[in-house]
Length: 160
Image 1 (cartoon, rainbow, N blue to C red):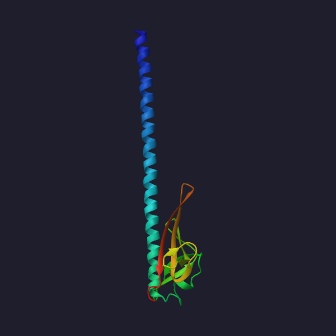
Image 2 (cartoon, rainbow, N blue to C red):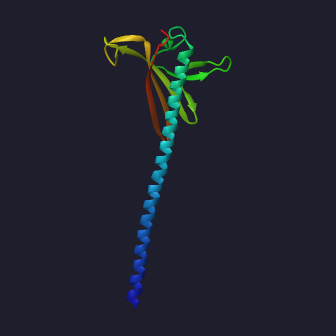
Image 3 (cartoon, rainbow, N blue to C red):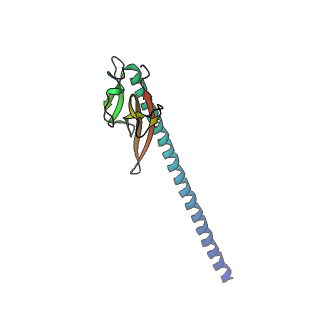
């Protein structure tokens, strides 16, 4: 009789241990899933901000003269952001970075080189003054770790 009561206590302890291990695994998986969802949401928002920045640069290009007050006169390799003036309503490109809802965004312009077949090349070739490489970068912090998204596109002087 005493032996069976002792066995029941051991069975209860084993069952509690198994249930505790299962619950901690479920909680760990839940925590991981919530972190993944949060990161995915932030990555999506950063991607939208980068796309918006590139569209703003396109609008700036379209309202200016390429080599007078447009993209050709901007310094390559420097951080810029885009802002809209209120009166008159125009896009302007300003040196520096911009912070929106915890995301820091910037755009960098680079010269473009083309080969004899007019293809864009990384090295060699001749500088094409009517094309700019545009890199939109979005940075944000999550749990003391910096994350970054970059979108790259090329814009041309389509008015030439």
